[in-house]
Image (cartoon, rainbow, N blue to C red; front, top):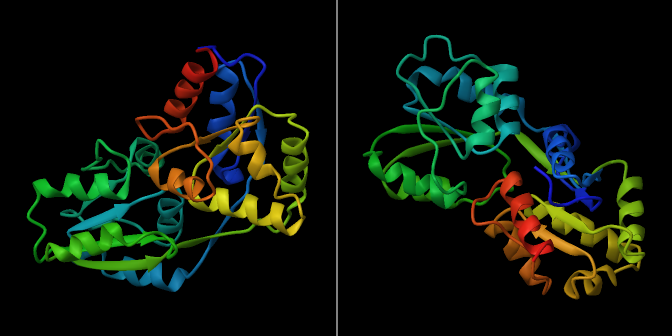
Length: 258
């Protein structure tokens, strides 16, 4: 599929998750520029191992990101957990799960914490034990919502999202935005937004905000949680109706060829 020929599109997601995005951007005829504004690192393996040790007691294991899956299976196996059901927040997360020869029992139609919570409405979760390995900076919408319905939710601090150690590419990106030498910046999480703007302000280059606000460089948000952060900066991003990277590209095609 084409539709974005020659457009320079910045991918801000972590480097380890950018490969598929790069190929997808190329398939639309665009030029991908990988500039991670967050870096994912393992956090507290002892918490993940503790969750592993109770795997046979769990009714559900819930994954809300590919990195949570990778962190979990680095320390754990599902051997013997015959009655365990698994939920993923969306199809991309399920794809990573499939790499470990495991299938998801539940995937919501809406790829957000709210959508996953809604998908659990078909189950009586009262008294159920649910494991949730994740980053601790994530919102508490899902665990609190499940607990309100009577579930026991066991959180494990599986990974953390941080400012990249090497910021050189981010400095280059800020200059490219100032020079309007790119067409689109695609944000895939709230922290990808916050880190870029934090560095721009530290470098006294906060005028990138005005460039974004005036649509001199387009901004795309993968979903409503990321959009909310951009809204707070008075930036009105392009956002797809279905919260995936591909749908974000499709939306860009519609907007940029209108």
